Length: 322
Length: 285
Image (tube, rainbow over all chains, first blue to last red; front, top):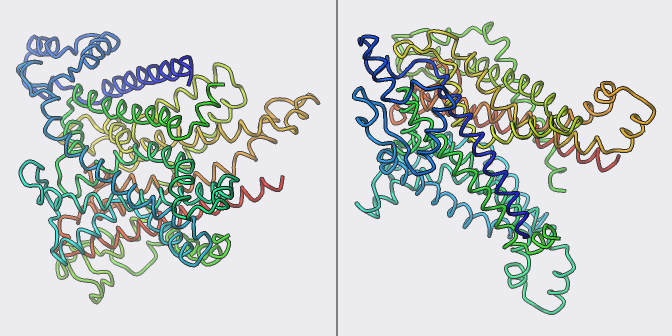
């Protein structure tokens, strides 16, 4: 890719980022209920004005946004509001340090598990395209892709957790405390979020692989006498995986949302709990920083995948650069 | 293709299920069943096939079957309204963006991109909070919960359908018949209405079915997070209300979960079916 292309991609990224964070600021500022009267409901006018100034709420939205953006960019996510003023509350970063690793680990497990399962599955289905096995799996996957993750989660919790009593259905165990208990507590949440992704990924990979299998270089490779598995993994998989990558990036948004819900179902007390609790208690600054963080993470992930294209499929880079 | 072989059976199953749900939503009140929020103190937490309560009751003595039927009205009502409004507004914005191009397109596309940069559930959570009452003591004080959900979900659906409509309209504005229409001096408005809109509608419809499924799932997710409709009023809030009792009265959670899953499956099937039909049609044009 030429540097001009990269620059324009980055410029658009920054523009959307600024607009998204401003939109979030706007939404949060028009949230009904104001933090000052929640914190000190029986205070005098002067006390209210004082606290409002201390929390940085007495300025107009543009000034408020600029101040927040400066802090956010320098890594300061702000503090939870407390009646003692801005410095009195717990810092948002400290709360994140507690909850975020749980959510990130969950999403990493889900992505790894889904890719490990769907790549061989998709390639197998493409290799055996239109066979009875392919049709059966395709139909089953279509059904599985449609089941909401919380329905899968509740079903698994009932069968595996309650009936068979194999795995815990509530609570989180940190990795540092006990590795085996940690993985046991993460199996059901991971499975709940993976089923839909496996179905989506392997169906996409199947379609792309079928298309790649029709290309001349595959005929060429097989006429050279290379084995089928060598051709599939060495020649076919890479060019077939670009849609899979896009889909992984696009699904990141629903994965974040899914994680928020599944964390609640299995009481993992991760990022989702932090966000819903902050919204329920009208913690403007915390909500703003948390939602902005999600948006930044989601957009960065998409940007990364855009840039990764060129690595996976050199044809993309030469087309774009030309 | 494999798809063609399974179409009839799948289509009958999906249509049958959706017809059942729609009929239940419209005529549910005429059935000789207990009201969905009637306490039956004689039968608390009754299992399935209890006389008088075919699908059992929950720990409040609410009849599960009545709840499902009443929930069909709430869940489908929210989904259909949000998607129709979203399709109307999003579709119009998308088509205008594609046809006018220039700064109008830039502004609208930026709006779509900005909205889509926040994951659906997170955006809906914030929007629901924005439209909810300020009074923490009485969160359902101002607008009915259903209305808040519909408005929030409409805002979420607009950019999704808007982007689809824009992309679809772009492929049509370049076609020869549009060029011909322009060159013979047809008015822009009538070109839009007679040539662009009818061609964009099918893809909007295909994604609309998928979006309706997403809305039902998001509504269920919001209920689990504690910001859904009143307890037991929709499918999502039925399972959210009862999921704590999964080990004692599993049917009160698993039945609404299964109903949601079947409905989303049927909606996805319709979406897929419409898309295949469009592909067929376009390959013939």
